[in-house]
Amino acid sequence: MNFLILKYFKTVASELNITHAANKLYISQQALSAHMRNLEDELGVKLFNRTPRLSLTDAGKCLYEAALGFDDVNSTLNDKLNAIRNEERGELRIGISFTRGQFILPSVLPEYNRNHPQVRINIYEERSNALMDRLLRGEIDFWITAENPTVEGLVSEELFKESFFIVVPLRILEKTFGSEKGAKIARKIETDFDIEDVIDCPFVLLNPGNRSRDLFDNIMRTRRLTPQIIMETDNSQTAFSLSQREMALTVYSDMFLHNYTSTLNPNVKLIPLQKYIPSDILHVFFTENTMSSRFKKDFINSLHSAF
Image (cartoon, rainbow, N blue to C red; front, side, top):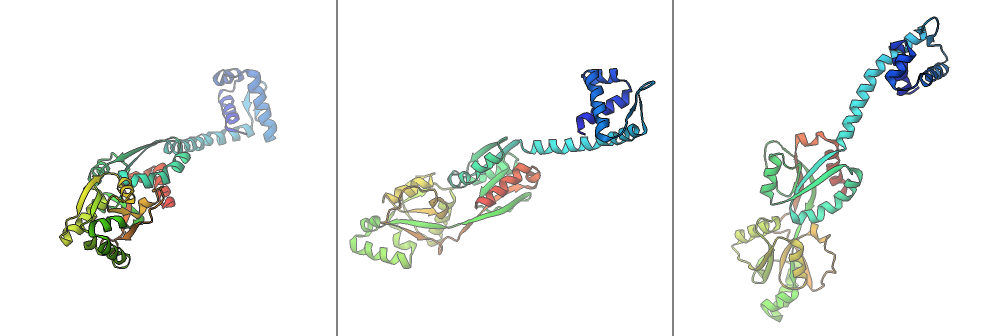
């Protein structure tokens, strides 16, 4: 017995007239009568007295009372299924910096999109303060950042640690300090790197406002140093590629190294900056209301699975 046959039975039991019930159900009288006979055969009981006029038997009355209760069950079930269907549709709005987006989003979104094809994904790539404002105004659902604001109403979950290193082309050391001194500094930085040793070299850095640039500038202010900046860019891969081509030094994140597809130059050293810049912890920020949707919860789970 299925819900459709149960619906047919309830209509016949309510009307106690096959013609009226068939008209309500938009099926033929013959088909409806056949369904009722098949139902009786399936249950092994007689549901209707057919003479002198159509009426319910005791078994029919019992089934009719039970069928009325099925209405509530069916309604509740449909409500729950509709809620699930609605949670599979919607919009996912992600705020992230351009540089981090290049690394994080390709690791998460392809599979997420396969699992949630009806969810529209919008990416906002802006500076941290703009993205935090968007999150607080409800214009984005998630903000992925290394910032750690203490703002009421925001919830965060830790993703992974990000470390930084300085990219030092050996040819730049030789060009800046001469062969002998350049070779001496090259040997030293392998075991005991000091930022002062390379401060006179040319640098290609990210524009102010980028996380690695702000951390580097803080080192400079603390140690009262002035780097020789010959170029600034918003793209960390551009800065790294130029250093790999031995144009200048730069500061880079180990997170972005995974996205570098060219062969690393053996004449360029990658020196950890842990003594100057502690590892950053990337978080995903959101509001408590955000997690009311299942497809948004699944995005958080996708981030944790990927990292």
